[in-house]
Image (cartoon, rainbow, N blue to C red; front, side, top):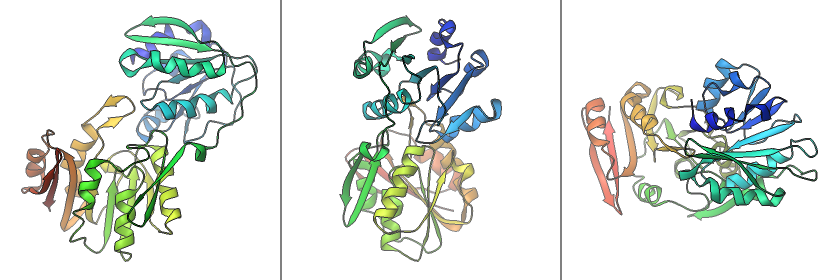
Length: 328
């Protein structure tokens, strides 16, 4: 069980009424807190939890419309996302009901606890398993936040890019994607997948430059999908958007998979999704189809690609990043 869940179970008497668990891990916590319901924005966690707890899991960027007697936020990585979740979660609570924040010390729970003071006096209830549990009781009704108030916009050439709080490289173009955008040559006709699309930069630029292509943009994070929707809309581009977990959920018969692949989900580092992409991409590509990706140079992806494809070429290297290309 996740150590943050273990800390909650040390105080289980606090969660006997209907409780909203925000950003909960994909463990057995809801078995121990049967009055709880979960709100997740990760398709991966949501899929696992919905199988175990049908009717109890909500997936999306906005809080459930129900009213709760208590709520727990599992600390996300992003400070801006924490602010959004605090307001959105507080808005679901009955008057004078508690809002809890739980997180690992190494993830910055003590810093994040200061963000609770917007809603009242923050009290530390427990410290165990290298985690802390904090509480605040809002004294007045809180209005739900508008997600657009947590957006940032930037430009890539003629494109307007919108990203919401918590999305990778929020409000700016990251170094790896910037390098990849400099090497968008030889884009094929047909179906192209931007895997782990984030705010939709790569797929949107391809669609702008090659309007006859069928572009798919996929991400596991609902906030990334919302960002991509805004990016496409602002630039009057049409593409297919997929909120889904991993390459196995991707379309087949693709001419190209292009990606700056993720290796974080929330506060955890996770290479499994990318390694699965590298080993399974051939099942989703047509013959002659290409996998093109940018990654930190220290990540040992080239041997994995070579084993799966039988070939791997380094197209470019700069600023600690490499662009790899492999042909089925």
